[in-house]
Amino acid sequence: MEEVFDDLDAAIGNQPPPAATTAELVARLRGHLKHLSDIAVADVSFPPTAEMSRLVKCGRPLREEPLPADRQRAVGLARRLAFVTADLVEELIEARYLKGADE
Image 1 (cartoon, rainbow, N blue to C red):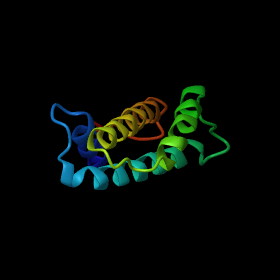
Image 2 (image 1 turned 135 degrees about the horizontal axis):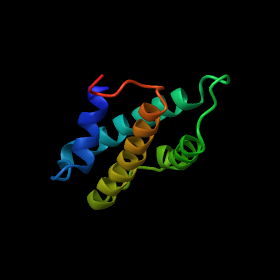
Image 3 (image 1 turned 90 degrees about the horizontal axis):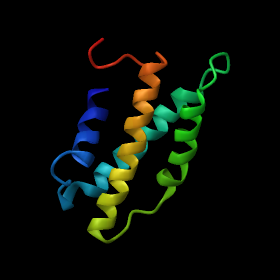
């Protein structure tokens, strides 16, 4: 989980990600979002909340969006991925699908 939080900080922290690592960051965020989306919908006996479902649905097109060649747009994609990922992490922790950083 620490890796997820590190990537979220890199994308939406105080400094934009360095140009040389933006593509790698986007790829990792896509992976985190896919993994967390899979967790949200994995157990049919514990269906996702409405908010989890909304975030999973919102994340699908972001995961498929091609990486823009323009640096600012690539950073924008990283940030959009990070915001959806962060919200999904929060929902999963709140619903006890995941343990929080302090547990």
